[in-house]
Length: 444
Image 1: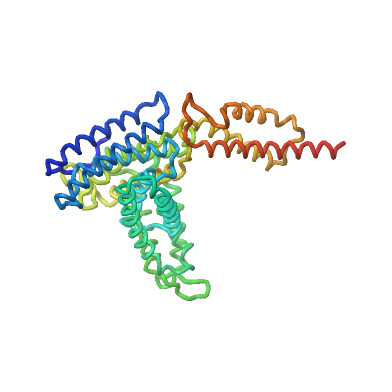
Image 2: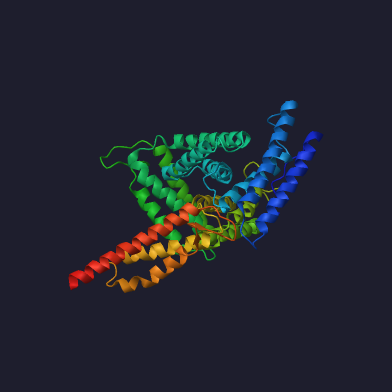
């Protein structure tokens, strides 16, 4: 079990049985998460979800009676662990579009937004993507209002509102940026991120960082009296956003080249740990369709949360209480942000298909890509060339029982997605065969 960040024990003895029950539920969730011998079944997840909701109701009753509705202690932290696991389980069983699945995404978005606000460099495109995710989450909550516990829905709605306030503040910081300076601003954000990534490579790419430095100096050379000038010779508004960002980029380039990718030895252990987390998440991103069980993300989330919350007033400190220098501070924060961004991307791209059906779904996706490539390259010269595709499609189709893909006696979630993909593949193969037959007829 990955440790959660520390919280005080509950003071009210009435909360002790609730804490014990939640710890027991979390252990059961952890055992279920770790069992890779079989796929996760919906009934197991729903049963544990209902157990958690029962404890939430008891906790709310106790705190309402004692007039302590806003108290936060270890019960709340364990409850958060349970909801986080339940949420990831909902993704694993393919119920992505149901309210409990929103919890893990909401928690990850909150972390990302907090880091964007702290780092204070991001583009409007970053925020637009998160805004779209918010809209999807709100739609999911709306659909679940008659199905899921009002305790859960209220909790999630409040968390979304909190996140949206941060998002609005981030948008506000960019509101004075002239459209004319947007491309410059986006390029600076991209360069700063690229240099941060270079700084974490096994072999520090001096030439690449110098290349970014040259680009920055070229941008600086176009300025007049320390300001960026528009195409018509006027001074666009938003200089107070772009000019400090350029100076920050130049300073970071100098600092990275000076350090040559070497972090302070005091913070090397935490750096190595964060680097390994980021590398593992990026590898999962590349092979997600074939290797990801969404519940695996829980241990990464908890490790990152613990490291992130170990900071003192926002600063990393060594065992003696001495703060990290600027280079170490920014490097460690970059790795945390990048890791949270990977988790966000993985959750967002999770398919609404149970892991039991994922092998079939992935095969059909590969088949669909192949058929699209064949169509894009001009089709086939003879229907015979489609035999391998047709044989594969028929073998998948024959796996269905009364139109459903069965695993033993179970009907896993995601039937609609898999059947729709199978139908699309059949349609593509049919179109290619008709085109080939027409070609043969015209040749005759």
